Image (cartoon, rainbow, N blue to C red):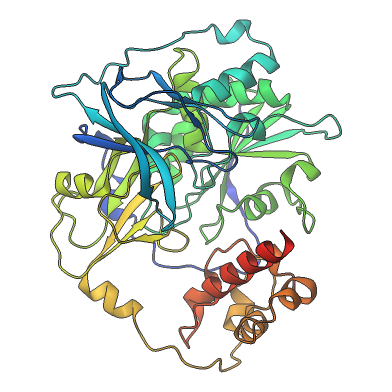
Length: 446
């Protein structure tokens, strides 16, 4: 019988409890979003080398057909999210405001939702190496936001020993509920994906960590794990940023990733719930990752919910479908704590995007308050889950002492969760300062 721990509520020190705003969408089943007339598909949707385009302007493609292949070991292919014609291959503005090469796909009218290109395999007949290759062929990346190529993450180096696969079902960002719905609606896909990942990583056990504001998901998965000896579910305290790899490992296993290290250094591999659910669904039928589930919510949204959206769908089309009405507004891809704000309605949904959050006039006014000098209150220090000193780092950033921030105050240990900016009574955008400082240090090092 799978091990169940709904009583233990372990956690990490520090962190925050921002309002969750999850009730608006947590109880709404996943719906399928129709095709937009034009899909904008960036070649760089993951950490690593961008995919290499293998189609030309004017080519006809069918839903599921590869349109870009992996250009390096740390890269994945891209598949056509719909049947249509390649309109062009050109530069577009990405979610981070930089110019990126993208394939523009003109979708045929009445295009079928059926996947017309696939390469089915028998998972039971695959070796661990063949599973890793199949994962890369799917174009699978981390769907929790980091977008690290899944095959590379699950390939264990010869000098590492890994014993535990952690499945991240925390979904600690406010507003987001897409992972929650996947655990409720597709537990069989998730469990199938966990088993494949365990074979790929050769781990002996797997633990699904879920925040205790989602006990219905804990209960559903436990029922599906009654005959699974090596897969367990554990509830952890609801606290931001519980979904960070380092925080979740601390909460579940009481292990600490060393400074400058990664989970592999302490025998752990971490994967997101939606990532492994997609693996369990797609690998047996040989389909590529062409869509993902996102949460669409916020003031001004008439039909908030969780939607299965084709990769490349412009956010303007999504807003039309969910009945958005508003004036002064802000659009955030992902959650409000770490997701980037975008200004163009042509910005597409990519593999790494977990949500589309809309903040209208009242929310924008709250976010444009005056910035005041630091009052040395120490709230940011008490909130930082990495036990850094954001106040001192902010002062050094103001003085452009970027290298000292890294050398003496461990700037690179910051994973930009946003706790410091959220809690600061002076409204100092600390995490934005830290991003700039790290970017400048990287440029100087290069």
